[in-house]
Image (cartoon, rainbow over all chains, first blue to last red; front, top):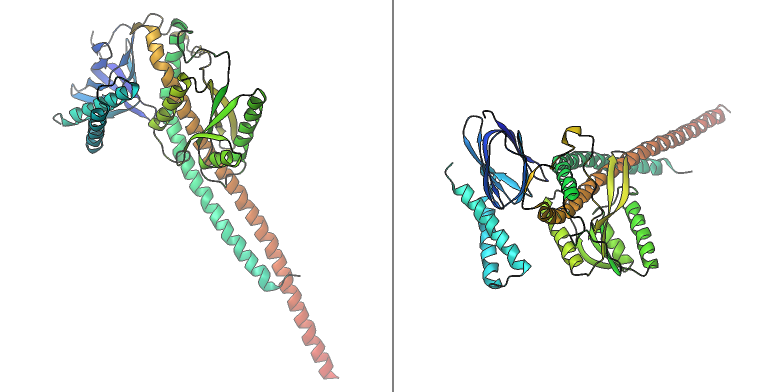
Length: 138
Length: 296
């Protein structure tokens, strides 16, 4: 089916993306999925990761999302994330220091599987994804 | 009667006060605009979130989650008290504390212990003065710029303690922003999460919303993920509302103060002019009296 699908990425602080896209790829918690117009209604949680979409000109755009939810309707994708950043808005320095902090705490915590460990791992994941995204060719 | 000089100094003093209140009014107005814009920024997320949560709750089992279950015996509760850091905003903080006081009284009658989580200096000072238990305090949040992570951190701590059975109920007291002229102190239950109402039915087209959606993972698992987030969303919105209300309340209070200054300046100027006229008249009488005397 031809046509564009509307993509909206909203965080509590602002609407990060609101535009038409040819295709949207998002990191669902049970695996990455792609959405074209006319998709079956679908709802899922998201992993920390990167949403890729092609804008109307066919250019690929990348947005970092910190978990959240995605709702897919035949003509619209809505992403609710705790935080989300376009590639140009990522603060690399901050992500790097967060990564360092998380690594240090990880070593201290050892392999104990308590909640704190899970949180540190989440922080690690977040900072790594940010750095990875910022590092990709502009 | 006050001398001319006294009245003049008084007028000068009132004028300076007026300058300050006027400046504070304008600062509050511009901050209000900022706070309102972050409230509008939050609205799309909040409404979508409520919509999704509502329909999920309808589908998934409601009783399964610990955050929803109402406890039979309540021995200790926590109150998240949102106030401002600064004063000079009329009855804003006093109203919030009045609400807290009434809740406190009601709960202590039933022999329930209360612990406070304070956002804002004024609420914290009030708790300290009354020797209430303060679990934690956050200064410099309300009234300034803050992100969603502030709410997440506070919410996470509350949920952890709630699940550890340290608290059996959690309330939030905040000021709801009705309009620039009206702010209402409100008590809301955070935990256990009150039964979730389905999203507004006004949207006819979306009535069967999510009904035929594929869910990944299952609806009840999704609900487990969303419920803690619901707490963060509630806290964040409470903080936003309180911040906006604070600035609105200060704007109104300072506007009134400026008006009061104007009134005072007017009446003082009148007194000053009267005193001046009286002294001129007295001087004239002296001169005329002297001239009469010389004529002999």
